[in-house]
Image (cartoon, rainbow, N blue to C red; front, top):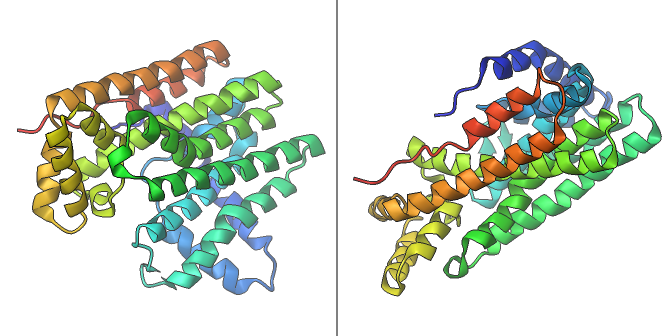
Length: 328
């Protein structure tokens, strides 16, 4: 299981109250006539808690560029707001978003997620005391992220599992997970005043990290026993590895088990064993290492403040661990 490094946790603990204050201020900026909206967004934020404080990413990027993480606190708030929205919309697409712990109905939560992911981040961007060119660039990152991320989600929903390959799944992951991380790391570089090429590289780093983080989440879903991916019929990278490694007859069996896994616990158990077969995990581990090396290569090319770049390197290594083990 991933363990946050001391520096990573220290940075989050140092700025967590400031990030919360920034989000509260953003909600208050909606104005006195928006009490229902503010209440709904507040309940959605209370419902969606994140196990890993990756909202420190823009702090780390800004600090890598300037030595000072504090100016990127508003971007950390944007990260939380965006993912709060995206996670609810993802649950809704999977048929799980009927309510928010009884506090909000499905329609209320849907409307709150739109405000959380779009309006509030825009308000935060517009409130920054920065040149118009910086404000416009931050806004463009947010807009592009929603387009690319939605493309990834739609591809995920419409995917034909029988045609899934490792490359096709990575393309989807670049959208639905890579795009938001690429957005927030690029925003950190933009706010730090980085040159265009460095912004592009930070965006690519975030995108690769987002793929790694999706692969980490896929593994954690299996380890936790929730098996939400199998219940939802999600085409994961691990499933694509299993399909590519299979013979024609075995592939048909995998596809049948995948279809049955939505409703059958025995099917989920049988499919999990096939996903954890040694040849499948060998390929999966090789690809994890490939993405890890790519992210580390970008960090090497970027360089930056020696107090903060090592934290990013450790985070990459922790995210790229092979956590699942071969089936008995």
